[in-house]
Image (tube, rainbow, N blue to C red):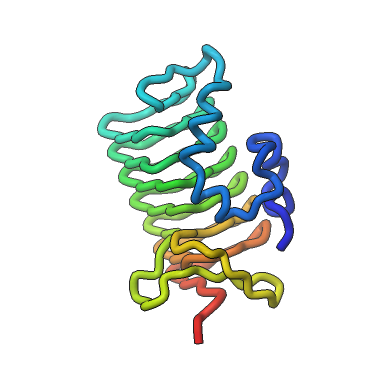
Length: 203
């Protein structure tokens, strides 16, 4: 599979040590990666108990940010949002009220409306998730939980049981759409409202 820079412009400028890894290798080690990033931040961040919030960011009342997390410049985190197990927001990211984000990287300019779930995913630049859309990260309904992805006719065994999506720059995800675990979306992809994206089905 191609590297993340082919899906997300200049991803390596944010995570230079991870640019040649597969996305699931990053999301499943994101807590450790963010802990290392925390040590490199400047005094334009306020850091408390492993949570760094840029001084220009807005975190509304009721948001729960669990360690480790980094909230970049000019981000907005809506009321009652819930971040857990390692979340990184690049600059100018908007997270709507009531969203849950787990073990994910969300790049600059992306807007996630409200009541969305993003799990173990890497979301590119200028992506839009409409209300209620989901990047699922786990196959609860399967006996075998291990996730495989299908990309350019190649089936890749991730070796993990939790991985959500890699969403390329400028993609649009419609309201109440579901990205099944292991979804890979190229740049400029449009997912219709209520659509289920399931790229690989086990026999």
